[in-house]
Image 1 (cartoon, helix red, strand yellow):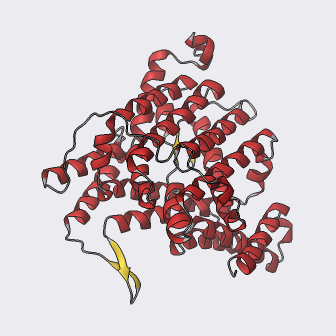
Image 2: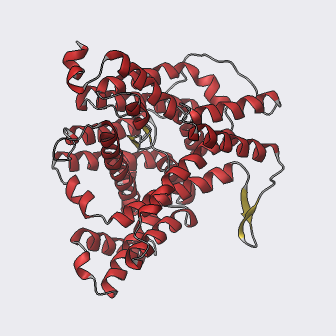
Image 3: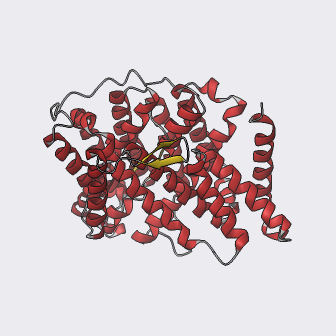
Length: 432
């Protein structure tokens, strides 16, 4: 049955390799089951319900990817987008988390339609590479700011806007210890480095009496507080256009980049360098986002950590099925997830930020018309506390600089249209 479903022999693999690969992938991304509820619960969402939604959304999305697209790619609520959801859409802009979930659902629906009508390739190919690198790095900087804030390293300062917190505080010291531990373990290629760091900080905090142990196993919390609570009608408000756009574009870039990168690592590309069943893979991702929004979590997307499992020999969807089953098993671990403090998950956020910022090295720094928009995009995300603003200002800067530099031929229609839409938004919608 497994051979018939996943074509193991044709992909040069076997059940044992796929099992090992699935466990490896899960361990590298298991941190999401504690980090995501920690971030989303800051909006007022029930922690236990978000924990269940996170596990279920990851399991459903990964299962679809494995059984339908037959790729060893795991999915879960995306880092960065969950922070954008909580701290920008709900925290800064004042929308309810129900409306934010509606925006996530709409972005997933648009992604699904783009995949069906095969418009996705045109969009992906028309976005300048420098802006893609800038967006990735900007999300990393955004996560870094949140991590440092959660750990008490960066604090509010009326005189200078931000300032340095109390470095001698136990929370700050544990954060620093967790971060350097994760980096060192990652350098040594220890599987599950991020999860080990989170657990180590939590255990030390427990021994110091900073957190209270509440047990290990328990029945899953109720999903009712978040299940089907999304407000789609509220998300159709004209002011939500840029937010839906931000959710959509970041998911589109993340998924496309992850799929291509993972496929190259595993030798899954065809002779023309293209990814077979790309449409199925992208639709799996979009369906996962819609189902995740219905369950009660932010955008579900493909995880680059899947390459860890691919490096361990995973080549088919059986790897994804193993990951999905492990996420379902985590439903029984809610007591452990609930006691992990913010300063224990902050090192994981900062580590992910470092990885996302690495794309800056690929920018053509000798071409100011490419470098400047990328830097504007990356800087404006943390400084305005909004991924959407960073994307918008990046597109506007790119189009205007290219035009004034006399390099009109390097501007395609989609970039010009998007830039004009964002200019109109800032002029009229934001002013209103």
